[in-house]
Amino acid sequence: MRKVRKAVFPVAGLGTRFLPATKAVPKEMLTVVDRPVIQYVVDEAREAGIEHFIFVTGRNKAVIEDHFDLQFELYDTLEQRGKKEQLERLRKMQPAPGATSFTRQQVPMGLGHAVWCARDLVGNEPFALLLPDMIMQSEKSCLKGMVELFQRTGNNVVAVQECDPEETHKYGIVGKGAEIHTGFEITEMVEKPAKGTAPTNLYINGRYILQPEIFDILANQEKGAGGEIQLTDAMIRLGKEQTLFGYHYRGSTYDCGSPEGFVEANVAFAFQQENLRDVVINAVERLMGKPTP
Image 1 (tube, helix red, strand yellow):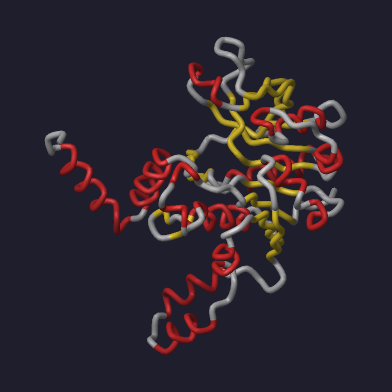
Image 2 (spheres, helix red, strand yellow):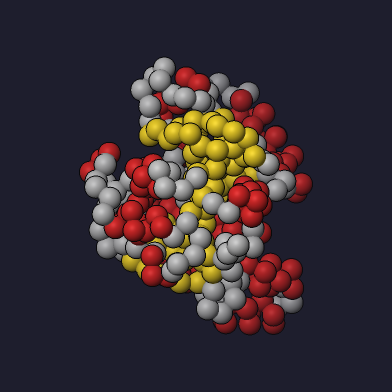
């Protein structure tokens, strides 16, 4: 069975929900506590055994490439000042030479088109796809669990988790079939079903392992919702030829593509750090005690 060695990160989005901040700073570089959002997602991929990191970028995203590059002046300064802890932390985050690739999505034609733009860098092998807006918090990373399921099934894996049944119309929802290991066979996939029509309350949370045949489907995929090439539409077609498995992720997911989710992620990850937990608790208690202006 072929190993999942490569991961694709679509980072070409404009981040309009965070304007004016994202006028100068890509949304993927906004900081959750002490790391940019994109770093959390890359760290998750690395924990799952990913060896090659492929970024599908757009204009004004060069800072992402710089972030994953070696900064000699910074490393030298930290070395001279004896900042060993910070230096070691940066070195651990540094991808190996040749382990990162960048390609451009020149026109905003949707997630499916962004994935298709990575076709030559991925080649003819299975790959992981991680949406950088979604960051996870759990003992075992979401992608690591997916890779384990992929090794059992040898086929496409889509991560899902439960949402409020009243909110299924906001998400891509899957139907649940026979269970296998930590997942199940996906019987159907519906993008934002009308209220009361969803087959389950299991929503797709932004992590995928896909076979390379998805690229041929995306190459002639018609535009869907919003006039864009939708990945879900292509996966529905792929599901007619190959089995799709759902990995039931039971950790926490924060949508950093929205201001609400971004703030929640900062609180959650700060609370996880021992040196910040009391600070967060005291600040929240103090703010809750203040009268509303």
